[in-house]
Length: 356
Image (tube, rainbow, N blue to C red):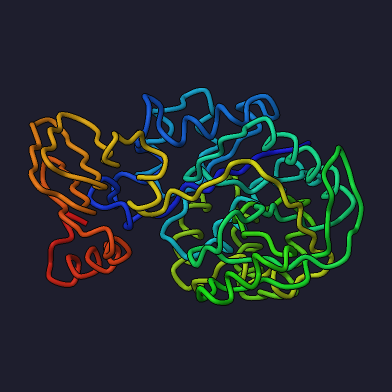
């Protein structure tokens, strides 16, 4: 059977102070009345029933997310004791799926991306599932529309084939976030996709890669798997998990895996990972200002102000970000929005974990 795994861990510190350790980015209602998690689940329902959707996140995050979408069975919310990278999180979900269905095919998806063309997204997932059943590791590529330095890239080699109107290419290599010159070069060449961080494969296929490429993780996962649905599960998980090395699925598996293919698609995709990215999807007035909540701007331009329960009034802003919450206020020049994550780390270092 086919399953969807939504990766919902991480605090999303680049969107502080809205996103916190106790409130993950997918749970935020950044635009509209639905959270990003609710939108992600709704996007999947034509393909997967709630019983076929799994979520992996921390215990606190899972509680918040389950309250938002109670139709997903509580047993499908898999608790990651602490963040040890996407490789470990995917491996943990994989052993749970393998225990249920040894022939399972899993689509590893995100809940913090905007997808403006959900029909295209579902169509490419259908195609990817078909390729995955032929023992390929499938990654979804995004056709780049500008020379972004914020995303990793995937180099496409030979055309492998086509299923359900989507072409699949051999994935030649994964490229780290480039500088501006290399980003422009890759855009001009036309054989690179942005790395969306979404993958589709058979569970037994990815477990084989873990065994070969990440033997310590595989060994620990096998010990955990032996205790699933037993009283020993939580104790063994708590014992083995902290010792795992932090690693992403890209570096841990995909860069050296066999039979990796990429399906490029134009699904109007955006990673809402920073305040600057969020501004691009919010409505703007004639002076380029975006605002949410009780906000009044005067003689301001190209700024974004997000209010909470009180009035936020500003005069003479230019290229500024203001985010107001009950216990913290962010004031930031747009040119320095990429430093918000470092600011959160500084808060922790000076003993302000209560606000992180």
